[in-house]
Image 1 (spheres, rainbow, N blue to C red):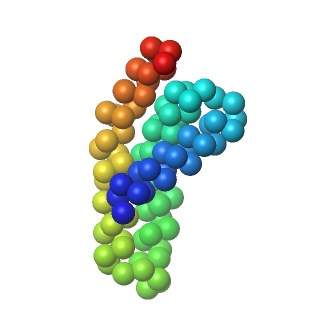
Image 2 (cartoon, rainbow, N blue to C red):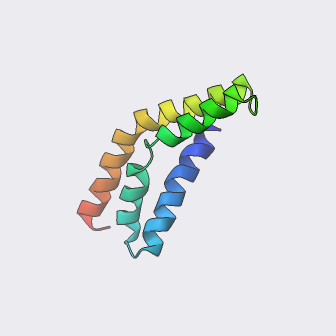
Length: 88
């Protein structure tokens, strides 16, 4: 779930940036830069847990996604920015 979540979060932002006219590498920087934005996810998943809509396992999986996304963003972002600088 964590890998899928990261791919979907980056992919959605990437697609939006491409539609807005950014190059592939610029869109990748935008996609990766949006990865650690987790405030809405935390609010929704906390509310869903409190309302009994999801169980503790799914709540834990979403928390893991948030944690991993925040930790891997600096590494991914520096690589993506490097690609823009290279012009590839």
